[in-house]
Length: 524
Image (tube, rainbow, N blue to C red; front, side, top):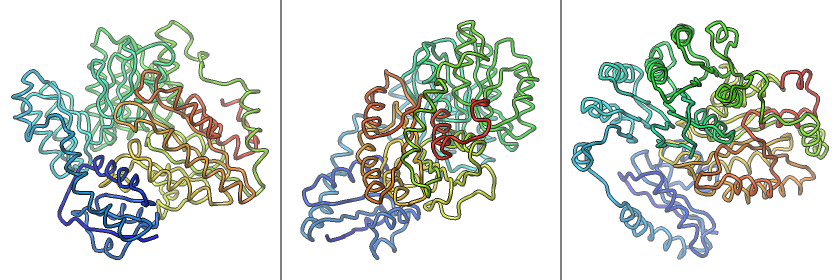
């Protein structure tokens, strides 16, 4: 095999377009592997891990695009690299209609009242400010702006009676329209406000699968509940939902807020006339109870309890996704009986930060400390996010993984590479992951992942081991990827598919521990 590369100096393209070009290069006969991406430090590290690093790439900067091809001979390498120009041109011709400025877009759509912004962090704040000044609600997908600027933008939005969702807001559903990564959910009477993109996706999808629906789902951005920001948009969202005649039940989702922000939110909730379900993931349930709200320990609980309230059922006993104990035990035993004595660790590979965080909360309570790039405690932070130790869960949607390349919900290549790497570790018992469907996500994620899962299992088998793989699918039957098709593809690849992220984490713990977790059944 011959490895060749080219550097396109000073060029910048949309990361999704570059991903698609990479896929096209891989289709060329004689090409073994290929990548086209922005030359960020994290991307260069991933190329090194994949065996696609050249000396030339070492000199590229984050202002450059790297093209690298691994092929049978030099002629094929040259052909593949030369085809990039044509593929870039074809990619841009596919864009049906675009506008160079916000003002140009508003001239074409004068009645628009919301703008979605996804640009470099250097320009994101400026674009958001411009939109607010024109009276537009903002959904800011971009990250990379300062906390000070976030506070300024959110205060301006509140003054104008507008929503400022973000920065780093991954999901919202406004009047039935999904923004960012969102699932196709039913309209209904449950409203959510969340500082958690995949938290919204998991809860709204589960609500839909239980036969209820969503009035509004307002995202705030992940930093909103920090002391510095003060929960500005969470409070605004709660105010809007409390006054919305279509919303009968409210669900609040976030990691535990800073104490002073939590007090503000719970004070508001205590005066709200509508029932409120609160999932401060891993937070203090008693504080939530004292505020008169209904606490949820997991995203699954939040969805189930909200639906119970709508259906006039008892929220404390309505557990539609919980499997019978005998069924759980049998599923786990079928997996752990095939493990060797050496296999004892769980490795979680997540595309959703909230799903990763929830899984770590559950795993740490059941099988001990979990290391991560988004750790529950500072001392559990990985020294190198590319290398797992003991129990590890990785959020592959953080800046270090997505700068200059598509989000892992779109491009599964980094997760496939990491999956195959983890499969080589003789101490790994379980690979745990999420599969997130919906608008914006890969059109066939299970179809892309399944061959890699089979390969990982085959590798372990060749080493005289068995590799357990556990997952949950976040989505609905109406999602473009087809929920049941995705689930079946995973099951056909030997994956244990659980009904929720929380159930998947618990199953992973049950398998890794050989079913020996004190108090497991009392707490589940």
